[in-house]
Length: 457
Image (cartoon, rainbow, N blue to C red; front, side, top):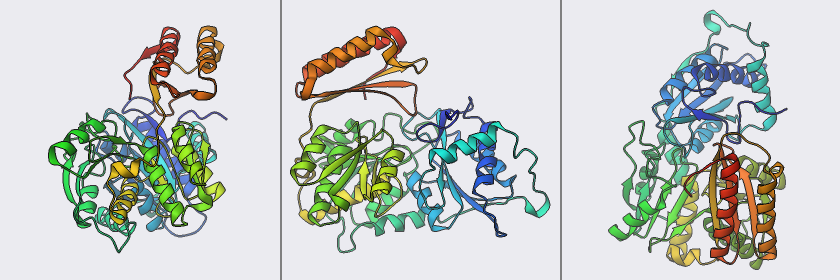
């Protein structure tokens, strides 16, 4: 069955426009409560957290109403990073967790995604089951009354619990004394947590993006704009800069020279270090098809390997659990250290990298040199609808021509975004000028037939 609401990372869209309406949010709450309610007499509980978007209040209240109407209690944690909600869900032995966030999207968007009791995102089968309940009438008549209606409770110390959890992911014999760090929290969910963690571990922190107002999340700040922290690193003479996205499940760095260090490079640094310590399970890193070929080469040369999945952290995690691997992630900076958390966690990822810096005494620029990045070009085309590009002869010919010109020296990857109406065109190869021209040619043809190209990012 094809999913009607859920994408690769929950339900997402413009807030107050279908499917991100209060009506759908309430139905999602009812359906989820029905599914996660177990056949035993105890009270059932679902955690709800959110980022800093204005529409979060509206959607949160609709979810609470839906969940409570099915006789399930709600634990409200307020603004907290997505991985923090996964942690709280598992730590408090709740039946499920819900995150209200559209991650790196602009503030007018919002989303709803679920975690199961163990802190992992839901499989496709469960999301389809939720949709079936929403579009059917199976639970319409289920209306608990009197004392069987659910209650809502606020968990006031959720931030403190998550801060302690994050600090415990950092080696106890190390600290961050002597490090000056520029930190951009994207005016998002980590605006309180992230500065506190780094400061309590001893770092001097120059905070940015820590004044959310409901509409400035990801607005010219955060992981999509590394040039912001690059300027600040140079201005303050910092050792490095790090930028989170709106829900803080991803992180991007810049080194002391202001050069960007992306997720592929972070994974190369961490996986090679873990291999040396005998801590990288099966000497294998899990990455997506978007990751740079330079990452494969770096692991291969060190005696390791990279397993590739479809784009999306859920597919990375599924492969990690299937194969017994403990490190995986995406070029975007969304990394999963399964020894520490069940989902992508920007602060956990940052602390693992900072620990390597402190233990080795090496600057980030030197650590990042373990991987040579091949030139890569990414263009986005905004589309009106998703259709198979192979059925358009001119597009198919242009793509095939590019593949033939690159042959064994590069690759072409075209895919639809799982969260936005975008067609992503990625080319990789040894000659940057060549792949730029080829990518532009493909984008121009797709734009003529299917949509309007937006800026690169």
